[in-house]
Image 1 (cartoon, rainbow, N blue to C red):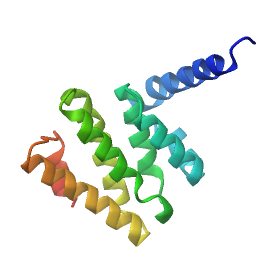
Image 2 (image 1 turned 90 degrees about the vertical axis):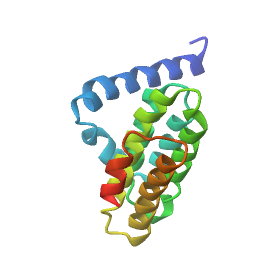
Image 3 (image 1 turned 180 degrees about the horizontal axis):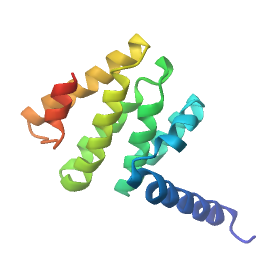
Image 4 (image 1 turned 135 degrees about the vertical axis):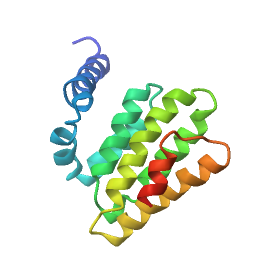
Length: 149
């Protein structure tokens, strides 16, 4: 095994492609992501790591995973994901809007949490997306975000 990091990267890439094509595109991502999210520290790390990718599909998967993390210790994740997408929006608005959809769905999931801190963090993200749309970042799901606040 000449390059263990290269091999690990290849395995991770194959796994993410499977998660996307076999689950997320079918609307069945919860089968994989919900159980993973119960491991809060690992799921939060993975979600944020995915959100740092140049690839919008990886960022979408990171946002999807974040939505299943229902723990008061992880309420800053969606705010950081939204900040990253705001920074990317000017250069790739279509990709950022696609990721923004998943951030909005994640925030909506959080807004129904049994944990007050998670619920409030979800509502705050929805409000930020609406405010962005009224300013200069026209999220295509801002109307849904407004309806879910």
